[in-house]
Length: 435
Ligand code: GUN
Ligand code: ZN
Image (cartoon, helix red, strand yellow):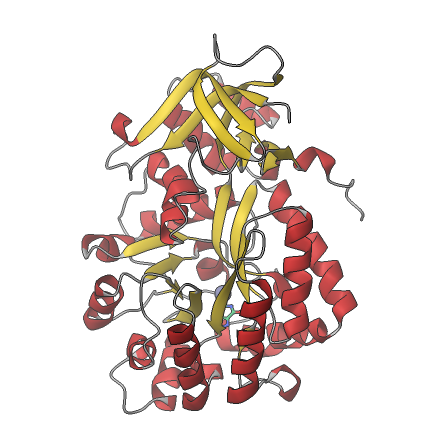
């Protein structure tokens, strides 16, 4: 197979940036080459004198070449929920989300939305996502079938939910277990698919179902676990009322042994001191979803508090509570949330989160989130002059950090020039918008 060489301004993080001038946290090559063979990166270095004569060179100068973005919390059945008008989380779920998700019992609908979902990820430069499907196993099949067509590394699972939702959206403790186990056996490790055990949240799972989730987690320790916790005050109150003997909301997941290094806890906004300690000690991941938290009005994530306690933090879109597929838009809103808290999120740290940070949160940083030999050639190419106003502003930008900050503040899918998945350019192959 011909070697492919992407030429451009290559940027890849190696560590979490401590400060805005922490140049040891990343590798940047002004005229760089990323060499790809069979979907894998085989060399990263200066362009001059690098590749063999037969290589196909794709010149992306003056654009930036980074690892593909990673979205560690998103709901594909909520594509048609984005922008739903509600006062708060539980109303939003009951009025819109639980209505929309019922449609995913229909395989044709699930397949159509799955296809559009991957189009959107690619359009926005996202190459891996941890995704919630609906309660229906066929929604998982539609999802992974479409992911396989595009050779994308995806984590997903059917939501387990056996109470507090419309009947058509409920499984049972037993069927939730059986269907999850069947999904793991069918999909986990097949190609680039990874199955996540997905009890939706404590409110929609009975203690019996939580026991089944615990059994699955013990049986399949290799699988991720994803759920929601401590997003909204009314939600917390209800969760605690449903598990009155337990200490707190995170304590519910502790009780059923669902915390650990492969556990992704969506939101983590209103945590007690004990809960922060638990998240940190168990190496679970607190997933910050800024556009969702602002849109639904859930609260302001306390990044510094969790970070100081050593908790692992990821940043995600949470579409359709979240309002954008773009990790650039997401980190821009994340920046604003922290501004309101009197905290700082520097642009190096933001781009670390979108790439290596989120890969580490998913324990996948040996494969994705970095540009290095042996890593998957999942890559995004970014143009900081994508719009007239960005081009004008770039006239006064003189540093890499400044360019990244402009991309974050003003960028969206228009700034994504190309998205490569396993070495194949997919964004330029997308069908024209079918409106
Ligand atoms: N909590 C339980 N389910 C959901 C969901 O679909 N979205 C959000 N934002 N929070 C949840
Ligand atoms: Zn969510």
